[in-house]
Image (cartoon, rainbow, N blue to C red; front, side, top):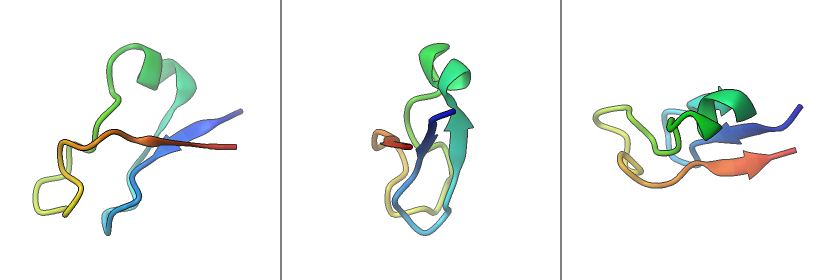
Length: 42
């Protein structure tokens, strides 16, 4: 099952289902990639 991850320092990730429901950007305050799109990881 693919996951979508933040490539910044927080290392956040969401499932494909969560991504499709709108969790498609880093939401961790203080992460250099905050507000940037998550990347698909197989």
